[in-house]
Image 1 (cartoon, rainbow, N blue to C red):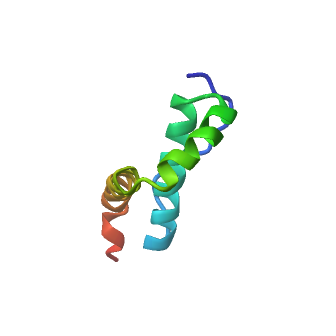
Image 2: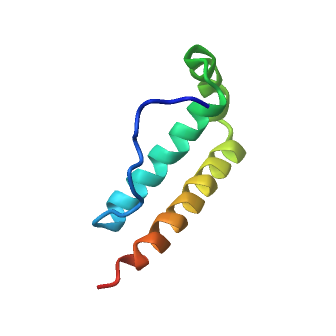
Length: 78
C-alpha cells in the first residue's frame, strides 16, 4: 500500500463530532486501500446500500474506529 498523501497526521481532535467524522474517513480510506478500483467500489455500492446486514456491519466498523479515536482523546475529558 503506497501513498504519498498524509491524511491522518494524528488521532487528536477537538470534539466528539470531529472524532466521528474522522472515524468515517478512516473507514472510507481503508476500503479504498483494500479495493483500489474506484469503479468497482461504485458498482458495489448499490448492493450494500439496500442490505441491512452490510449497513449494520459498516456502522460497527465506524464505531470501532470511533472508540480508538475517543480513547486517544481521553474521551474529551478536560
